[in-house]
Image 1: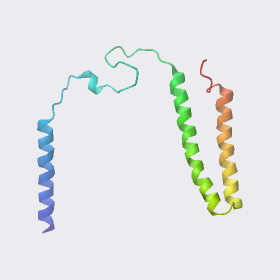
Image 2: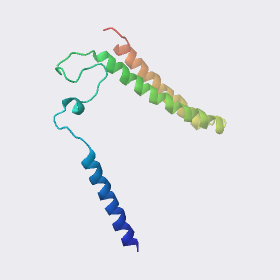
Image 3: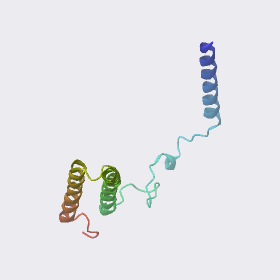
Image 4: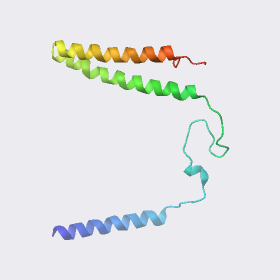
Length: 116
């Protein structure tokens, strides 16, 4: 009985895949659909456009520090539940040290300045 269900499910899947393949209109020569989208860039013109690397560098720094800030919330919640145990306090201080060290390195490197 289970084999009958498996065969029916496979037939329905195959039928749905064939229907979607037949009704989809794929254009092999539409260059704009196959180009990656980047905000502010026209995909139909030349790819040798100069862009400011500071935009990408600043957004990458933002993402790294945003993830680190998100990781701070569970540490604070654990500290509240465990009544400020020595281990969680050391973990929090160590994590904040790494966060501040990364910020200082980015600051002295000049990555946080908008105009270079």
